[in-house]
Image (cartoon, rainbow, N blue to C red; front, side, top):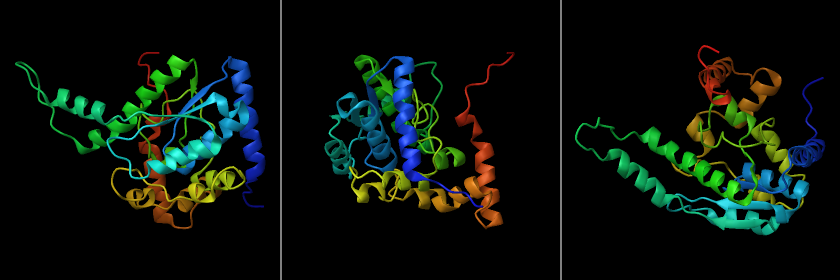
Length: 250
């Protein structure tokens, strides 16, 4: 018998696990970033079901301009959760400006596009941590298993959280769970994932389809040996993002 995923059962399991984790560790409020994409949308809905919408704080974190921020606002509105916008654009610009400045004796740091791209997720994490601690809340992660498998995430950015109800689900499964939640508009759950930076979809940027990554994880192969090898290569190369820092000599 092949792999079977019961989306409704998974939804209910995750709601129960969030509620139990809150009871066991003594918190009632949750903060999470709301991007307007499926992962943060489903995560917010799960938290609202588990802890009550009044205990969920959705933070929208545009970097200067976010073309689809209306979707983020809509997520908060349909779920009835608390919402706040914090634009990280000025922080981003300030960081780049300070790093590029040179005083006598300083070494030079040349501009790096990849480093710059990862500034956003790291500033968002810092902002969310600040807000969560100020509110006495815990930070909920929103990254899924497909992204983690191929390293499509930022170390010390979106990988940093206090708990993550999405981490055992592939991108395909997140959509399936979202479609069982009647409070969520289907068009947000099925929205094409993008990084919000390059103008490309996630799949275009990755050069892989989420269905292929799903099949690799759940079935052991996507049916294309070359693609399987590429996913395995990325998984091995990015395993450091999924582990705690190495303690040398321990």
